[in-house]
Image (tube, rainbow, N blue to C red):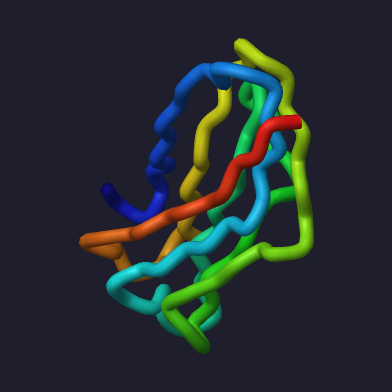
Length: 100
């Protein structure tokens, strides 16, 4: 991956779910004023469940927002670095789900 690429991994929701508690850990800080933004997307649209890794840390979390998504909807996690951010070798992403 380079600084202008976006990583996306998708799946279909097996049931109506509430997504919450997004946590991200990168093996490196983005550097300078750069960031890594991670967002849960539903049907290719960004949701409120998002967090930003800044140069001050290699972790971020969103423990406030909850997103309800219906069954059989495509969801993915989008990772977007700013143009000059350092390339991480590893990014760990976790989130919780609960039935609606």
